[in-house]
Structures are given as C-alpha cells and as structure tokens.
Image (cartoon, rainbow, N blue to C red; front, top):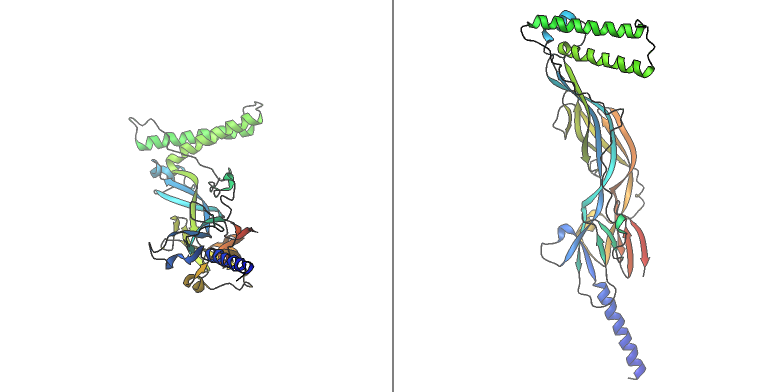
Length: 362
C-alpha cells in the first residue's frame, strides 16, 4: 500500500469517526418514556397557551339601616335594603395569553460523551421552556425573561367605591320614634336647601365650581341620613381572574359560573349561569404533514429537536347565550409538533409559541 492510499484511508476513517460522534451527540425522547435516573441529561419544554380571563365585577355590600322599621312611615315609595346581602354586577371581561410549559410537549435530552466536534449549547428559561440551541445565551439580558404579567388596571370610570357607614346620632334619652322623626326632619331640611340653591332663592352669584361643590355636599348629607332608613350600599370594583388551557379534545369548556347574588365561582359546581370558552381552530396548520402524537411519544430521535408551528383560533367567551368577548388568537397546543435536525446549527425559539424564529447553519 503506497503512502497516498494510506493517507486516504486515514482521512476516511477520521471523517467516519467524527460523523459517528456527531450522530451520537444527543438523543431526544418524550419525557414520560424516561425512567428516573436511567440516563444523564435534562428536560426542556415547548410553551402552551393559557388564557387569563380577567372579570371586572362590581360588588355591593347591602346592610339595612338602624331606622328601617320607620322607613315606610316617611319614605314609602323609595327602595329599601331589608336584610344583609351581597349584590354582583359583571361590568367587563379582558382576555390575554400566558405562555406556560406544555406537559404534552416536554422532552428529555440525553447527552452522549463527545470529544471534539460540534457542541450543542442549550439555553433554557428557568421555567423549562427552550430558548436556543447552539447560540449560548442567545438573547440579551433584557430579553432573557418572559415579560411579567402586569396587573389589570381598572378604568377610572369603573373604579367607583363609596365606603359609606351609618352616621352617628345623639340618641340618649330619646325613643326610636323620636330619633326617626328628627332624622326625617333633617332630610326634609336638606332637600329644601337643595331646591333653594337650584332655584336661585339665595340671590348669590356662585361660580360653577362653587355651585357644584355645595350641591354635592348637600346630596352627600341627604344620602347619609337616608341610609338610616333605607340602608347602606358599599360598592367596590374588583378583578377576578380565571385561567383556562384550550384543548384539541374539548373545544368548548365551562370555566366558571356567575350570578347577581353569588358572584363569580370557578369551575362547574357553583350557582348561576355558565361561562364558557369556545376555541375554534382556523386550520392554518392542516396542510402540514406532521407526525402523530403517538409517534412523538413512542420514539427517540438522534440529534433532532422538537419545535412547534402554532395554530390560530377564534376564541369566544360567553355568559349563557351572550358573547362577552371574541378574539382571534394564537393557541400553541392546537398546532403541530415537528422535528429540526441539529448539525453545526444555531436555532433560536420563540418562547411564547415554540416556533423556530432563527436558524443558522454553521
């Protein structure tokens, strides 16, 4: 064998050995098929879409007044609180997407012993969602974490609340009937002052600001005294979140119930009208010939990583037969799982969807 032939065989063997090491670099397996402690490696997940529904609810605590027994005597035709209760009114609902690790798209990467050749550098978020491979820390620090969910700000027009308690009266040595008579006379005097202010009886040229302030104070005093007979209503506006994960198997889910007497209760066991979330895929991924879920779960793949092409869906939230909100959103888990080969490759993933957003062949 001449020297040239020997060199050719040596180069061929070296290339074959290097290729073999790259092929055995890592193996990707569906997480549930890995026995604990069986292999050395790590897990990564693709994100699924969780919907956060923020229900804006007006809550009113009703308490009967201490002089309610005399309400019909002086205020027969006005509405009265007869007993302690809570009243609820649904004002609005807001919907947003939250990316969380998908248990049906979580994989185990077993790493082989590799000497030389290309190294696979995996970059994974603290919650387990994969961000990049072969890039090191692919993104700058300001982009390295998912944006925190900002608390919902209630519009000023909705955030009305009056913490009204019952005013204190001088009651020593007086019967309840006398106290009621004095309170009723006070209300009559306040109403007379309001009429005189509006009619111009005082013949004073008030500025618009002064007029509004004076009338507002009289109105507040009247309501304070009226509450002694008619009862108190303390109103506040709150945000109640409900979380739902859309599913391919169940396109319409009952996530909560609402009633004006019991408010919002999550799940299906509460009282009131059902709140449903309907997710209808638009089938933009229908033309992709993707492996079945059973194929994804049953096999191991050398030097391949799973990514996702998400699906777009029409999402509708309804209370009984009334549509509360309807939007077109990206729902990751309704899409398809595909495999991308890794060989001297850099891949960056969208941590909100699991889609590959950047791929570079080294």
